[in-house]
Length: 295
Image 1 (tube, one colour):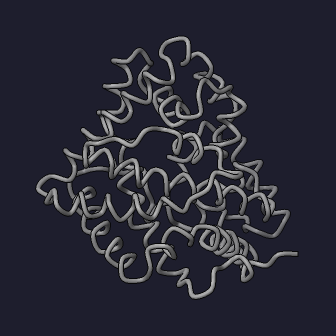
Image 2: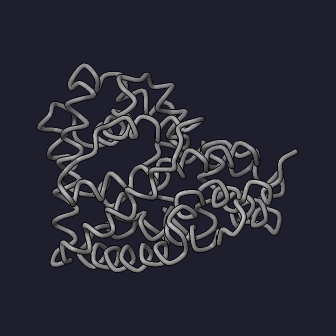
């Protein structure tokens, strides 16, 4: 059996790589809360709301089925996905959606970055584009779809695309870690919410399409496994399991920053954290959605 230690390249500071991934995450994820996403994808023919999210993120893979979206997005209720996919592809082609998504991401990031120097945007984009050159598509379907897209030339959109490649590659690896540790999509969502990071319970149920009854049933199953207590808090075993999932995720996503090396990775963290603070300060995330931190 391959251990986590055997997966770690020699000399990698996995903690620094993890810090870099978490620092750049808001540069991607803010887009899902931006008005520009709904506005421009609705102008392309989609219905505003969940459809723009599902179609926008899935479009690089082509006109995929609801089963593919459920599998690759992992923690969404299948019934919610099926409400919007494949109908979205009858309203706009994947190519049209990809173009509108790039445009909306560029507009939202430009607005939220405010007075951030363009030189910083270009520098961070260059660093992350270089980091992405060592990524490979095996067993990473969301990453692979995005990696097949042409690189944007606008510096802000180029930065967003570079962040997205690293984010989706890491995300695909995270799903491998969840599977390895026996957590379904809903169980992963329940246990992650129980860490106090990411979505609040109410936001997780609403945005991911799970009913209170489905959530309670999953929580009961986790109680039976000794991973959460009757109040929904993680037990000692639950904390250990979530820690193992995160460790495996971090281990499988060190390569791009191993390629950059410690000095350039530290610069990524410095630049991205400053930009993330600006995004949050400019209202990137609505109140009452995130409990603290985020993937």
